[in-house]
Length: 220
Ligand SMILES: Nc1nc2c(ncn2[C@@H]2O[C@H](COP(=O)(O)OP(=O)(O)OP(=O)(O)O)[C@@H](O)[C@H]2O)c(=O)[nH]1
Ligand SMILES: [Zn+2]
Image (cartoon, rainbow, N blue to C red):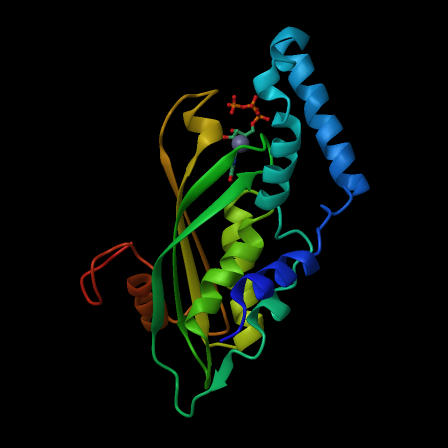
């Protein structure tokens, strides 16, 4: 029977104390920037309350998280998950994908749901990669129209598909929480691919990329 207390104490003795990594220069300047904004907007008395001491650093970290798609490469995100499937030409639709983005005008969040439908041409994409592609483009300062287009165009380029439709429905907090103070929702649609103007193709894409309950009944 091993001596447990000896084993335990030797484990404790060999534990290495991990120092937190040094703050990066860009984090320091982002924190300083948020501090300035808070001082200017709230006044120094409110901004320097002890409860808000860490707020500039937290805000900088949150902002970095919300823009982590900047510089990310969609090709890397997809990796090896493009699969050759002989005869694959029929509709594939991935619906109800939630997303969060950041309005490039006000730096306020907009969030919603995406539906993606495409007609492959012998190559299909791993299903999770649609959500990953959407996130790469959403986690940047955006407007909804460009986000919709970028997702559609990246799918077309990656797969060489017959046609693809991306539909987004979102609420913009810059519109609902300030300014107009109107909680409207905005729907955008982008259709791409060599067969996008074929009426039958278009009809199928519309069914796949719409919010409706099921194939055959939904319409945009
Ligand atoms: N088309 C489009 N417009 C957006 C999007 N996000 C925000 N906006 C709009 O961008 C516009 C910016 O208008 P500005 O007049 O420059 O800014 P503002 O004075 O803050 O405008 P208000 O929001 O009306 O108070 C607003 O109408 C926003 O609603 C988006 O994704 N797409
Ligand atoms: Zn905005």
